[in-house]
Image (tube, rainbow, N blue to C red; front, top):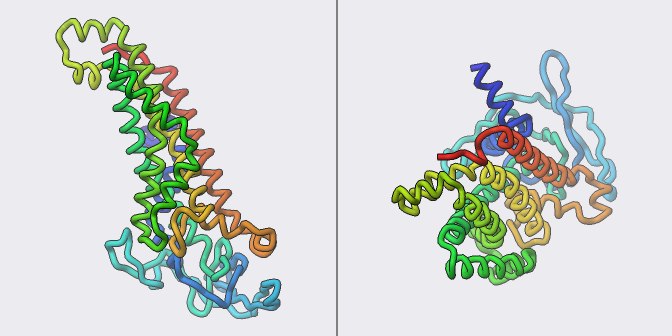
Length: 346
């Protein structure tokens, strides 16, 4: 088991391991978060981080009190409540299916544990980031899957068929690439009325990002197919009577697997940033549902950043995710350069 774990870490690198940890953490956000994403405390706007302290053989959570309502300044009240593990807290539905109220940790009322501070409505930033990160992961993975499938199919058909099919598909991809992505996304979002469900918004954002993300991949896949089509192993397969589907799936795709994997890895950050940009502009997921973009939008003013600089944690998390995915792509590329992934003859 240790050998397999070591080989896995060596293959995907530390960036891949960290992404798996972050993904698993967001997947179980309901259990790991001490509060629901919409749990408010209007008496604790922009409350600072409340970290448990160890005393008398257990952890305690200090209770804050507001000392300056105008500047939103807080100080410990001198009271504290115990911190419990695997405790009963606010009820939720895990993944919208399993009803439970069990949390990894929680504080007794009226205490409030804020590992990363609170927002304007006293909502726990740590809990909202977990939920928002899961939304970004799911949207990005689904969007990349759709975009990747369309781009790969179009590139394979255009490169292998050639002729008027190639010209038609490439002109279509050029038209899509010529349209400014941000304006297209804003236009698609603007035709949808506000107040629709979060599920509908998620589908619209995913479809919009997928619609503009396949074109560049299709052109690169087309070039790879045209390059590989002249190789001896492909010509031998065609001469032996192999069908186009057999040539594509057994000879062309396996020789592009490392590039396609790297392309998927490097495309995910674009979807994360695209969703965050839409939500930041108020065109994405709407309150109270959290996303990394609308959490970051709360810190637009200098006054807010001065009162609650921890709201920038959403932006820092976006940067971390983008860097980790880019690093994972570099690791996979380095692994592919020394192996047979790009030039395997079948």
